[in-house]
Length: 102
View (cartoon, rainbow, N blue to C red):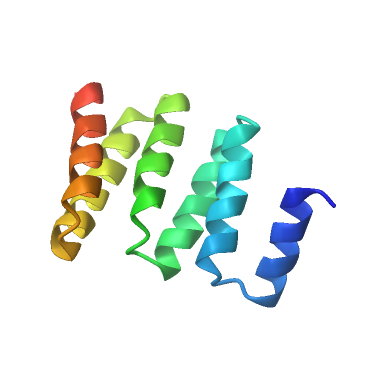
């Protein structure tokens, strides 16, 4: 079975499943369907705002789409969440990504 089909089936049963939502977003990234990836990351962050990897990968996808202001905003949101959670590693990765796009 196709991985995306399996993830969508999981999400039909539980739309708030963060792991399935993240997996589906990453499948879209693998296929270079960045628009769909961003949409899935946004859905994930709406229900699981503490899912720090989503901020980084959503920012990367937004960069690929040339939506740099939105990418900056995504990284900044992630930095705030990582700081509040005390996750210094995630914060530094998000800050480095933000610095790279200026």
